[in-house]
Length: 446
Ligand SMILES: Cc1cc2nc3c(=O)[nH]c(=O)nc-3n(C[C@H](O)[C@H](O)[C@H](O)COP(=O)(O)OP(=O)(O)OC[C@H]3O[C@@H](n4cnc5c(N)ncnc54)[C@H](O)[C@@H]3O)c2cc1C
Image (cartoon, rainbow, N blue to C red; front, side, top):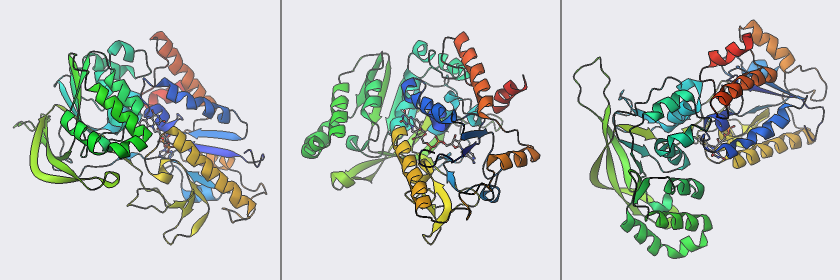
């Protein structure tokens, strides 16, 4: 819009609410991270921008519909699935095993997970599989002081369950060693500093890894900082709650309680892990199974091993990488040919890694490629890019209405937001999110 002031941008969103994972992923006790929403507000208030919520691409809208009304389309629908572990009993229905994606979505109000119903009273020990920032987020939420948590925008129904939470121990398990963890210093420090919570890890392994790799660590500042925090953390040895980092363990099997009554769900009892050893140079350390196994007893399992994008109608998809194939955001077909007028941004472009800043930089790159394509007179979706024959959302919205879709405008969203803020004020929290789409939509009837 900066380079070509006459550009109009329409944004279609599956939910009646904008913000994606900034609202439904970022932890409720990290409100400062959500400030990026203000940046979005600036764009949304520009008269050349239109938000069209409650519209699902691939179901309500096809590529054919869009192609006929736009010069360029940017796909940025994120990564809406979780990666699977591919282990025994993963696909059996065993109660209290969830992906971290579902658990995070549940406490953050993502409508898809409103009815998740984790049981936080049946056990005092949770196992989290994976050692990234999301693993630390879910662990922190389980161990955090409830009074502190109740001041955040965590949903009231989740808070209700967390008030009766009996979990006192969280074991965070990774397949490799301390130098291969993927969480960052801020999140680790928050865990170490949790009140009344002691920390435990394999100190022998940690000391050994630190002393044998001292030179490499000293050259990698973020890693050095992380290891310093871990080392200091080992002295946090008092508290009635605990968390631990367990290394060199790959999940092998979920084990359920014995239960002969088919009408009652089987609860998880343990996870069986394969014990690994590390091989190879530090920059390419691999976990190799030793043949030994270990069972960890637990009543709640959260799998935090990453997200995955899905292919959607009309788009090429690289199943191995889990992304739409692209060069700097320009979509490529299976023979690596550029697709005129089709672009991709966000996790769908690069894969489900990286913080908001990385995602934004990535989106800027895609925008620059669009501008450069126009400047180079490359083919777009139409041959008449600068003739206003295409109507964009002016033409698409009536089609959606004909299909029975109730579209949500930016003004509509602001009404929903105001109702959330109002409900939040009554409870001394920033907002009380609508956990169900129908409830959010009902605001628009009044
Ligand atoms: C649990 C978690 C915690 C995080 N915490 C932090 C943090 O503290 N700090 C930080 O910097 N980063 C954090 N991140 C990373 C950050 O959220 C991502 O970098 C960023 O949100 C990715 O943006 P995106 O646009 O690719 O995807 P998303 O944010 O997921 O946005 C995709 C949007 O597309 C919509 N959509 C999906 N399918 C369709 C469809 N068919 N039609 C129309 N719309 C559709 C979705 O509803 C969503 O609104 C976190 C991520 C997770 C998962």
